[in-house]
Amino acid sequence: MQRRNTLLLIILFLFGISSIFGDAGTGINFNIRFFDRRIYYLEDDPIFVQINISNNSPQPFRFRLAEDRVFSVDFNVRTNSNRAVGAAESLIRRRTQSQQVFFREIILETGESFSFVENLKDYAALTQTGAYVVQARIYPELFQERQVSSGPITAGSSVSGQPLESNFLTLSIRPRPVSGPEGIPLALDEATNAVLVPERLPPDEVVTYLLRARQRGQWERFFLYLDLEAMISRDPLRARQWNAESEEGRQRMLDRYRHDLQNAEIEGDLYLIPSRFTMERTVYNINTGTVTVMQYFDMGNFTQRKRYTWYLERKNDIWVIVDYSVTNLGTE
Image 1 (cartoon, rainbow, N blue to C red):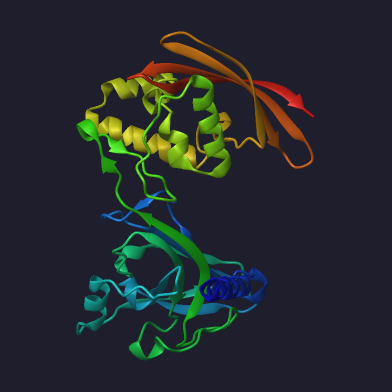
Image 2 (cartoon, helix red, strand yellow):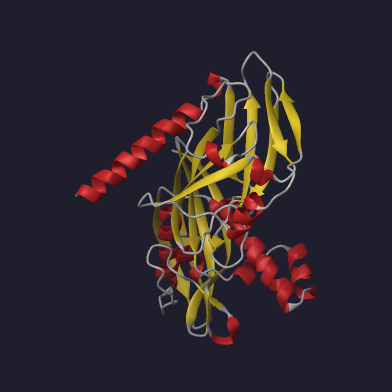
């Protein structure tokens, strides 16, 4: 109970601080976001963070930006238990060696913004999987060791030796997928890290599994019974590209398809989250089947109805989804 209360206090504290510095009306707005939000793995994957500074105050805002950004930027990374993550070895070396720091002065007039991207792994020693909270600091007069313990300046301040702090991001780092037979990666349950293994479910239960996973935001479960190669081949252009690619190129296409689907960049009807659904009809023979589902989508003031027909094939004695079609039925 004590641990739960401590975590709650931390969350409330972070929310309060994030609200203060995320308010553009106070003057200088310093925000961060993931540049290419995706599933992050422990081994070697960069974690790019976009840093944005906006001047919403009536006066110009001046700060120094070092050519080597480690003398202008820092990241405070903590675990869910509020344990600080140590600095990356490369960061320590770059800051402690004797050198001259070159910089340029940036002047932001009212209404202007300045952005750049940094790799979080250049700053924090992220050597373990798990969930983290990330905050950035920028040093308007460059980083100095004595400034680390100093308090932040408030939004709206001009150039100062004290850091300006950003909003908070939540970061989840996962282990690299386990390779199964023939080198094919096995899906891992995001909550338990247990290997997800497709079961011999009938077609209607496969579709139910997919829709439930989408409702809960469980992407690895969502993809478990989805034949991505078949889904890619629905587009003639992508199908031709698939056929012309090497095995390595095809794996990149699969990774890109997953990424684009999770970020709502393709397959809009597949990405939508149903508020509820009703199975209408299931027909199948030994190798192929169709499942018709009425799916409802909450649009705020009204509910949209769509009839989905899911097409399945039996592969290695497992039913997988290879295609779908949608009929729009209006609202209710």
